[in-house]
Image (cartoon, rainbow over all chains, first blue to last red; front, side, top):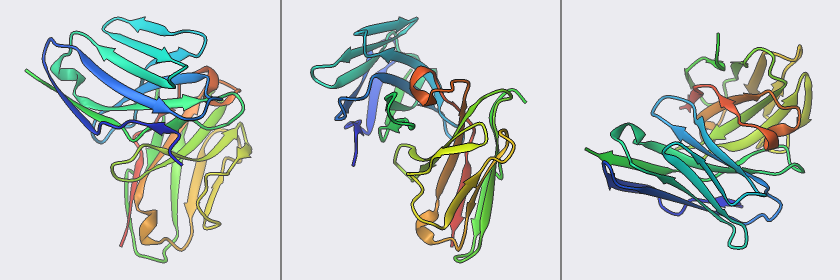
Length: 112
Length: 117
């Protein structure tokens, strides 16, 4: 069962504009959410996270928003840069489970 | 090395052959995870170690899959009698946290791409 869903397989934005990547989850026990970034032939690398006690976490150009009632989170990148072009995975975990569940990923392309 | 190291990077196996994939986690990291990533999908959990103890193997797809971490550092994922559906990238990740992934990020290796012919 897909407990973490990224419904947009791809997204294309212009350099300098905002990129918004979305993620939905179904398991209400999830209490920690992360975004990972993956370049071709490399493993995913951690980008930003948010605990369920917060609704926003910002780190430079990256901001993650969490809407617990809607079981939805999003990653905002502003301004987008060509180097941001990668696959972005949303992930969720909970203290009561040992694994981290990942979405299928969204491929972001930032055009110069 | 500074990061998680996996070998081999690429492995081609004939159906029915046994394979072994190795993971060197970041030194001092207590938790180690194996994930399977099929083409176009996100990583799927296979198994989790805390030091040498395998605390969760619920994600292993069949009894052909076996993982070990005998000394609490290097881990090996073994797949016996490989099938075509085993073709995937196998990712290893480690974490400093002793509480599974919930309190910190996972550091991933580059993965081992297995192709079963």
